Image (cartoon, rainbow, N blue to C red; front, side, top):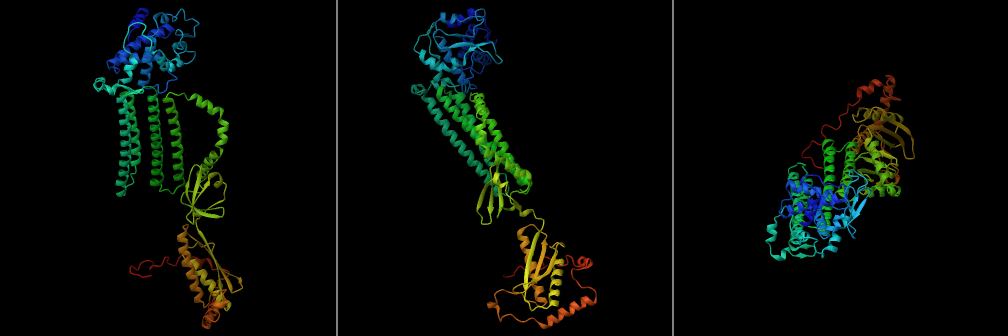
Amino acid sequence: MGMMIFSASSFALLPFSLADTSSPKRTLVNFLYYSEIVIKHWQQETLDSKEAKQAYNQAIRTMDISLVPNRTRTVVLMERIILLREILDRFDAEALQAAPDNEQAQGVSYWRFANSDLSIVRLESGNRQGQFVFSANTVQQIPSWYRKMEALPYALDSRTDYYQEFLITPGPLFSKGFIYSLPSDFIRLYGPLPLWQWLALLGIFILSKLLIKLSFLLGGVWNSYWESRGQSWQVGRLISLFSAVVILLVMRRVIDNGIWVTGGVYQLLSTAFLLWQFLFTSWLIMAMFNYFASIYAYHKHNGKQVDSSLITVLARIFGGLTIAILAIYVVEFMGFSISPIVAGLGVGGLAVALAIRPVLENVINGLTLYADGGIKIGELCRYGDKLGTIESIGLRSTRIRTLERSLITIPNSEFANMEIDNLERRDKRRMEHTFRVRAELTRDQLRLLMVNIRRVLLRHPQLEAEPLRARFMGVGEYGILVNVLAYIKCSDHDEFMAVQEDILLMVMRQVETVGAQLAFSNQYQFAGKLSAVDDALKEKAATTVKQWHETDNYPFPDFSFEYKYEIKDTIIYPATTSATRKNATV
């Protein structure tokens, strides 16, 4: 109380006035005055009152807390206020009276307490330029100076040690009466903390783990419940992550405002909880971006647009940027300045740029693949001399499923420079085959065969009218060569194989109709086993060709335009009886 007499006799202070920091003495007196009010309310468990909050803020205003980790937490700054008060109460009045006032402070940039390292300095920059505050180094060294001066007696009135009382008392969430009603062993210090705080922290850790585990379990149950009903409300993981963040936030508040752990133990626990909160929050942010991207890409567009793949990657990019911004906020929140980190990045920017150049190349080339629109997920492509289906296009690499079902990962910087043939983007598929027919075939039979094949090709509804051909290509080693070329109106490979199969069967039927036979290279196997060409079919072919000449309707080199128009798409495909026999056996 003697220190308060010194304060009151020097200046008339009002409980709700701003702390005067115009000189070292005024800063010192204002701190003593407002710290007395704060400590009084802390002892009476009324820190939530308006007067207590005002006094707390003004006491903090006299200190430079820029170097204090977790400086946004009441328990951290209350510890600094009580420790500084304990130190100052051990200085004699003459040492404190020596602090220069306004007239004496002209030209003074700092003032040191007696022979200690504690000082009040004038701020030379910022919004509070010219004001005197307890220096950042002083505030940082308060715990060590308390340990050095703890054994010294108080300069004026003898009293209990506020800090020793502070170590064992709870925060505003808990009652002091309840803690003091516990057995004496529970409020005895074991290391830096009393037993009741150790037990409370253990309970916090166990409860946090159980609740987080339960939240993930319930999230999995949620997903399974809706999946079994055919609905894709897969938000169970999001709910679990959000619950984990809330659980850690609540537990952190219990530690900050209930258990009131102090010193290095608090800094360790605070950092651990904040890192876990950051981890789960980052996980939640990325999961949310991916979830909403999947809803847009696959539920709205069914995953068949290039933009669908792009939105997934963009979601990851924006999610990563959001997490990076959150990380900066976390660093600032913990009480560390981001400026040295930024300065370090500026100095080492060139080295970092060179180190991550391959990564940036892959990212840029990945975005180029999306922007170009040449490929998308699910498409069959030929890259180099290989075939495969695009499974994913990530920020760093592209994954391709080969025809052998193996998974190949190619860096985007390499894949973007390859010659990529997108087989899925073909508007039609080319079919070309060369048939070898036995040389016993007459010229009229050959003419009739080519006309019949052309007619079949023109009539087929799945073939383009142009280009389309069936031509005599020459005489080969084993027979006459007839080349058939057509474009099938489809892009799907399975559909192409089905239509091609139908056309080849029709061509073989025309070969049989004119009396021709396919030639084979294995003469040893087939010698003496093939039947001779039917003479009646030869005569029929000759009569048909003669009739073409007589009626001026010789279909060479091609059909007339009118005839093509008449027969175009007149064949029913598939056949009316295709896949209709319910009891058919194969």
